[in-house]
Length: 263
Image 1 (cartoon, rainbow, N blue to C red):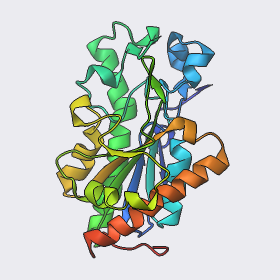
Image 2: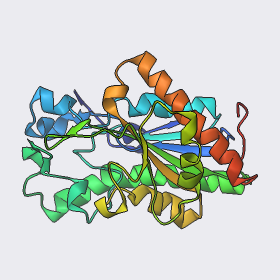
Image 3: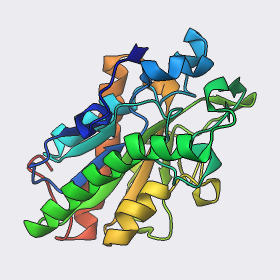
Image 4: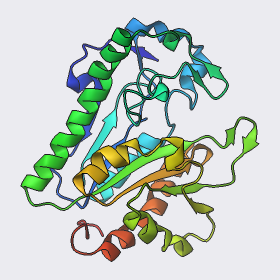
């Protein structure tokens, strides 16, 4: 999928319910596989542009449903992570990768410093600014906030099967992850693990550090295997399962991030 963009903040960032006063801020950095037309599809095949390399299938649908259920705001990127991965800092090679697993990304080869800086300015900076604006507005309004980022992952990676179904990821702040994992018994049919299939050592906790730790917000990254997110019914089911872990975890953390109108 390609799309013409005017490169203002509204083009590259989706904000839903900015004024909502529920207990969390939901992020979805890999919500879209849109590649702006100026990049010529990054030289990718149609299949590659639809693959997990370009986005996190099903993640946005889950993020929206969580935000609605918890009466909370959501911020999502509307550009493919192969143009710029908003869960990576500008200096990271993986922010604009020339290869993702077995998929080559010709349009990212040999980017100059100016080309990289342009993508930072066009995609990453507006996304981060939108997140910061929501956080600052909530602080000003006296609303305590937990940060929750939603992702999906491929069931096969470099030929290896992954049996984890829901990953609960954290960086140095384990509060929310610990509380969610303590509720895993509520989903006995699921394989739920800590820092699996990725962890901080894989460079995936940038958003947690930048938007969570830096603002002293309890934070967690939720990874759902994407074969469980095929279709609206499955997406709704997994959103409810995440809520089964998240709602009591928020309550355990106490009044600072408690509740939501539907908790």
